[in-house]
Image 1 (cartoon, rainbow, N blue to C red):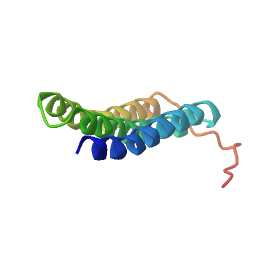
Image 2 (image 1 turned 60 degrees about the vertical axis):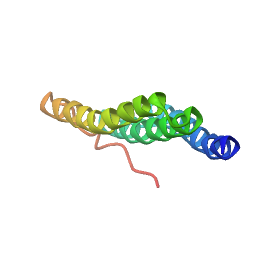
Image 3 (image 1 turned 180 degrees about the horizontal axis):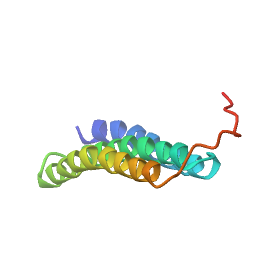
Length: 105
């Protein structure tokens, strides 16, 4: 069972690390604060969830997995809430989307 947990946790950790790196690239490349906040918020929530799930599989069934689950639930609640609060504060503070920037898909 330990080998299966290792085989399942490696892809979760790898995808989580990839999402962390892609979120960092998004912070550097996107033009305005709202796009940057979206890149950071979405990738951080998903990446931390995948990394914590991978760590839970490696830790096995015990108190460590329970603590990791509590951390995961806390992050899933607070991260989107904090991103929303920051975006609302930026909007009320006068930050605007740059209309001169063209979207490229």
